[in-house]
Length: 96
Image (cartoon, rainbow, N blue to C red; front, side):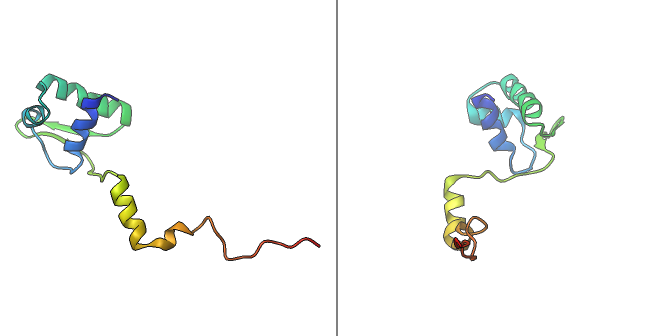
């Protein structure tokens, strides 16, 4: 997946319409490159991207990116997730 496709995907992740022109300006690239990135997103990730004249591009379903900071924040709030299910409260069997 190209760097541009990831950048376009970050714009579309919120599930709202974004014009190809606005995305292109934000990324400093052409609208053609945005169009190519949208098609790469559909083909390589299997995501559905709506393209509506006069409104722009929109993912069928918004999503939230996982990143290190959000994962750490979640684990800090719920440290028990570190233990489950990898550690059990049962004691290991003893040798006879």
